[in-house]
Length: 159
Image 1 (spheres, one colour):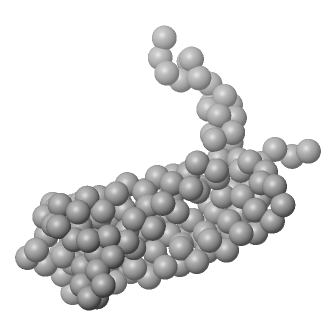
Image 2 (cartoon, helix red, strand yellow; image 1 turned 60 degrees about the vertical axis):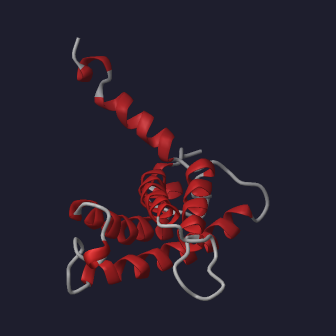
């Protein structure tokens, strides 16, 4: 039995809607999550935009110090821009949060393996920003985008 026969398109659509439909949050939780998503999403877009438009292009923004393959640098840059925009909108939020989380965990790994501190009190390299972005992505991945999101209007059940 092939995959489409076991899972007809309607069932796949229902499963996708269930995955992407946000869960209700108590009180002003959805508003707080909206502010967090928009602030972090816009910051990620700006953070990644420099990498996409860098003179070396999205595969060369780390220069000679790159410890990752060029294609991985491009994935990171576009994950920041695309994932950040989707997080800010609350659109396809689980996928956006997963992309950002993976990228930021890679950045944290890069910094830790280079011996960088969590916070550098002298203003040098550190991993607190990547760690913070990863924590926000994990939060949004686990609790959803909240009721003030595009996902709510597109994927939530109609009452």
